[in-house]
Image (cartoon, rainbow over all chains, first blue to last red; front, side, top):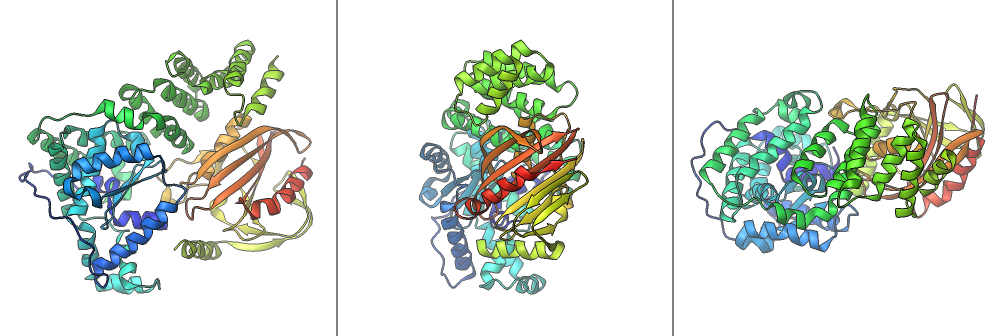
Length: 386
Length: 190
């Protein structure tokens, strides 16, 4: 496990939390009063040490080339957090991280990380609010500190940590604590708070369970039971139970908006970049489920068709050539027709021996994208085909 | 913390990899490929990178020279370890076109969360025939190091032969790039 994964995991982890909580009961307590704003703890305390560690991680994250620096996007997500967090808004700092994996984390010092793989999979602002609200719930209830103290109480852990020789016992505990799952009680509480915050902010709470359902669909596309392919799924209650509980919250907290248009406005221009990163994962079965879902839920149809065509072409299974061509054709018929769709048509036609079509499409691609990284390669193909 | 991680990575690699010196001269790699090197390299026998060989000049946490020789249709590239086996393996197909092979390497070199941006890809003579050459930028996830890379290769009688070199972009890549280009020009396939 990488350091950043460890640190991030120590904060409240949305992706992990999804598999941690499962409740069969109907939500009983839908009242929640936020605590006063949290203050920096005594640096000599265990909590103070944890804050210091996370402050250092946050400074590193600010310098990281993986940090998304687009001011407009950051402001959009920060605004959603502030809408949910109320008086705690000044203490919540959202960091967007370019990584094509579904994950969000919350640190006790107010640092929240959202990975671009999560933003790609979110369909609307209410779903974003579900994730952010859940993480804020962890922050408000200081779950990381509770977890740290729980672990400190275990002498066996203390001995284990001592083997690593890292400076600062609190820091050791914080880093390794992050490798362990959050308690089910914490996850229950964070989801309950998140749902309440969503409702108070005017979001449709029903979107929270849809986030979970969508993720499960992708995992099932691997051809195995999600409860078997992930240690998290294997060791925790069945995901459908949680989906039911979230649906129960939605029934108890009706109304609100999904915020489809707002999310499109806030994030739509990054769809192409995030899909590029997604396709590079080469996890084609999952990605196809994602892309097919996005085609029904998002704008940017041309870009989505382009990437689904690329996935079919790269996967190269029986029948994929035809599916790829159909997607590329759909892409160039869309209002946002991307030049690379012509590349896809040309490469696919070349593969099928359709020389005339290949030359026309590849030439069109070079007209539209003369400075493309593969322009010389494509130019050679055109010359060979003529 | 970054330094600690790099040290930890080196320790882990040292624990599961053996290192041996590769001296200047003509060197066979695999059953069909031969290349001539000038200057000594270090060859790590690291299972996680198979079927590639991994060589390095400066140390594997700094620069990596990946050598693929005779990769057959359906062969798994860099097999996933049990700890990360939730992911599907990436497989070479003998009918891959140049752009598909480059995309395959993109997938392999971003599997750890690193970013990868192709700068150029073009046809290029390799092993006496038509091959390809590509350059790229990569940001290594584990320590945020900004790397530059170059790759060469060809598919010959259904088998992939390729060389990839990547190193930090400011100092080490320029230091060894010409050396790698020279090696690529000497590759022969029988």
